[in-house]
Length: 383
Image (cartoon, rainbow, N blue to C red; front, side, top):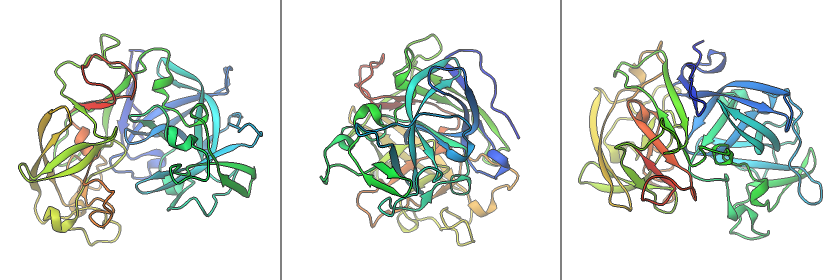
């Protein structure tokens, strides 16, 4: 197993793309190590192979991995809070707890985090989607969500129930078998750990090196905290892309073609875009590979990423056959597949620029409401 490289700056931690925990064979998984502590104590636990995800917010760890006694987040009636968290490939269920979180030399005290699992509360039937509740369904020891927002849901989850405006992600649990949807205030929602740092709290930077089209067994990287707060985290010449609706940029594919809603997501292990017919790419038919494209020859493509502030960049990328990638490698810059739900679900973005996009780039994620050196109002992506 390859360990993440050590870093010396207190506002950085090492990242690694490798086969994942227990050498599970995770392809294009970007991992970090997170330290959790019982609040206000030195009783701590270090958890490795936590998936770094710019597409979500907050710290989530497998309940089965945790040895600490973390206090529960409770509502005014003293009932513990749990969460049903939707991801593209499933729904993470588990209780919300309080921990001190340490990342490198930075720390966030009394942070609401989610434990993934059913040890404390059984997943209710109203929590829809394919269950992510254990190692077999997550294939990582947790998720480090370093996305765009301060809380993972925000004002909508604090709205009184019943109302259609509340997305019903949070629950209170009267017993291990009895959890019901509940309104939860911002202070009790799973929170971005970086936004809770005393300093370097306005965003994150992921830097990964270029890799060859044949892939690599493992790839080291660095996650830096803060944008323009230290000598090592300036924006430099990066182009800032402000976000439409606080979430999305526009991808025009091919260049000069059709515009699609899109986003940048280090937690996705491929470039997921359109469907096979629209992309004019062959979808894999082999067992276990139907989520990916399998063109007969590696195909060079290009698209334009643009945003509301008139920023624009042409992105050249390639798509190789997932069936022909080197089985001894776990990092690829040309792994791609159709976007789940496209085109039948009109709410689904056309492009998910997953981890292959991040190789060879320095990608900035500015957190909403935080001040940065850019003239643009956060949140934004920059690269």
